[in-house]
Length: 224
Image (cartoon, rainbow, N blue to C red):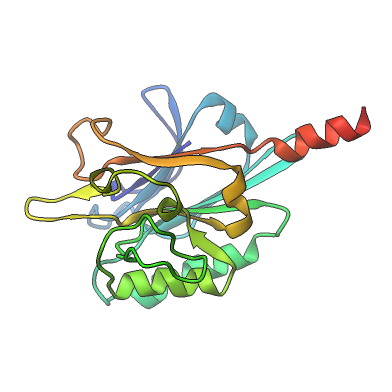
């Protein structure tokens, strides 16, 4: 499953892009093409998709179920400016809080927040990058109220390999994976895949390797 931000596409719903299953959440058909989020799904993930919601051109979600494993993924693209920020975080909070605890919940995407490299109460780990901004504080506040963490910051990589966006004059770590703190034990690694964006974006792909079938396998062993 690949989450996309700033697709700048119109329309919302399930689509096929060059044979790939996609759930797209963009602006209205008559609106100016801007913002936009989407999920690209492999056949396996698509077969597990049970429901989805296209909330806005900045927020969408999908629920997946395979066996007894339930996963919910929220793709979010935060505004840089103050305008629209409150609406964005209200949408994310309502969606996250409205999904049952039976689901393993992930919030992924470009949150345009700098969360720094100082350890913060199990929310921010040792492996962030220097600097913090208002959006970063909102990310931390969102996590604090829900026992979440910025998972990227808990996996050791060279400083140069932690940045998720490379601009003309600056670089930053603003694309995150937010999960329950207890989920860290099941995440093998989160790392930036430089060179895999094909030159179409100044962001790099952030790869999260996570074991999602642990409860199903564990249940089988107990039953055996």
